[in-house]
Image 1: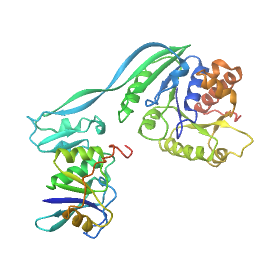
Image 2 (image 1 turned 120 degrees about the vertical axis):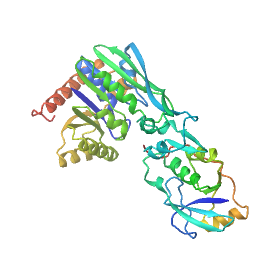
Image 3 (image 1 turned 90 degrees about the horizontal axis):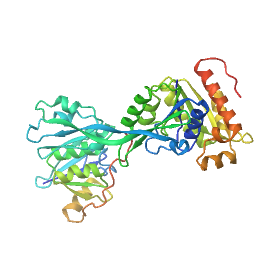
Image 4 (image 1 turned 45 degrees about the vertical axis):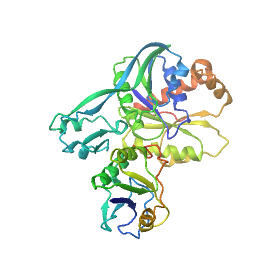
Length: 120
Length: 287
């Protein structure tokens, strides 16, 4: 099973990015193989709809779980249709979040914010 | 002549100025492009003549014809499309109705349907043709309504056209001033007002528009940051509307200054003359 986490840098010790749609990178962690890969977030330069595009990217990489500090309605809609579960991240690094998830300490995100939090 | 009245934020007096300029002109067109909260009509209380719907086109995808090539999803600049579990999803509020997805589809799986996003109301008030764009609550962009409204007022042969713009300097404001011959920037005489003025100053400069500034809520006893700015940038100050309780009283009663108080009828007629002279590039007297 694969987990996606928005990250500020390209390594597992990086901090979790505070945004989902406009994160610099995604770290994709394979729970079984215990391997990670990094993705450049092509959505970052979008004028609008970055959340949708970023969610598409996550979806296209065969991810089942997203761990993020926040997520907009549009992105959440895409992820829900793709059966991807969204967990609220905790403060700290990507690695700390993967460990917390493995230990069953993360909770499902239930405060999806209304779409559209930027200009057009 | 098309005269657009704009400001960097709401509440500076765009509607006050555009309504009164139109009323001062007598025979004129007033177009309310502030489609999220049009309020010029509150003052004109016009006799309703007709209204029309504003519709945009939204793609719809036939899942049976779609072969999953994703050309549409990848192309969409506005990220209005997503491809999830062998199906294309359309996010209506992000769609700009460009039609590219339909053109790109090799399977003819995409067609367009119409979506109602608002309306335009037409009325008449003592010689002023009052045209109001109204956006439905919850819609993302008023640009299509403004486009349709401004195309319609082109057909009027009823004197000068006064365009009451949406606040700020975003897409809707750009659309509203696009074809304007002259822009009137309304500014409050405060430091905050100056900040907002600078935003629209950048906008009208970018579009190479002729423009001038009207100072609203003007108090001559206070050192005015906007006058300094206008001097530095060599910007024409078209007029100064005083900070006057009488204006507030007439305005909050929903009345038009020009039609209620003689001194303001004279003032706005003068303003109109100044603007007309500016447009014709003649020397105007800075009052």
